[in-house]
Structures are given as C-alpha cells and as structure tokens.
Amino acid sequence: MVGRSAVNAAKPDLAIVPFEPATPDDGDAEPFEAGEPIFREGEPASILFLLIEGEVAIERAGRALRSLRPQELFGEEALRGERVRRTTARARLASRVLPLGRARFEQLAARRPELRELLARATERDAEG
Image 1 (cartoon, rainbow, N blue to C red):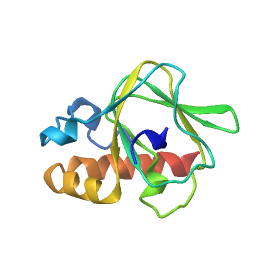
Image 2: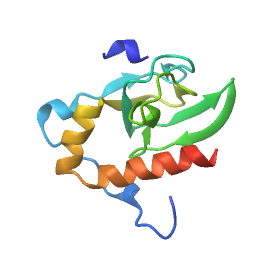
Image 3: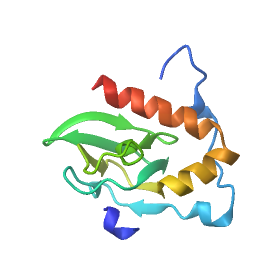
Image 4: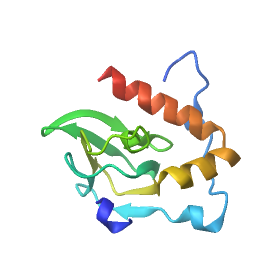
C-alpha cells in the first residue's frame, strides 16, 4: 500500500529496454507478495509506480481490467493531479515496484527519457479503459 512509502505496435517496444536504476537510491523498489494490494481504489493518489519485476493486476470495483508486466508504469493519475485512486493495483505475482513521486519521476526522466514514453503509454492505456 502507499502507506509503506510516503502501446502501440507502431512505437518502439520499451519493455525490452531494461530499467536500470540511475543511482543507488533509485533501486529502492518495494516488494509485494502475490495478492497484496499496492494501492486501493479511493486512496489518495500521490505516487506513480514503475513495475520492476513480477505482475500487477489493475482492478476497478473488484473487476480485473488488465495485467501489467515489468517496465510498465501505473498509478499515473498521481501525476495528472487527480486526488484519489480510481483503481486498485494488486500484485498478481510476487513483485517489486519503484514508487515515484512527481519530483523523483522528473529527476529520473531527465536521465532516462524513455520514462516519459512509458508514462504516455500508461496514460493512453488508462484512457482506453
């Protein structure tokens, strides 16, 4: 839970570009066991997450919407200024996620421009359903 720490074929497939932490503190991914929620629908939205390893299910009102694989961002409503989560994110498998507040995302994206493309994909995916 957040409380633990305060797409397209025409586009290049960024999932094959491994995310390597740029600095030692960027490697502070949080572990989640299978079935454990990362955040819940209705909670405050202040942090974006990058899935480092594992698989995450995105759910709304208890219904599965999609599964995410490593190198995908989720919880992007936090950077769009939305105040509450519209979905629940739950580890489908044992997973590690990197929490990114706005400042940390901007700092990393300055060094890793592909993160902006991942954010665009996540936002596009969210708009589709």
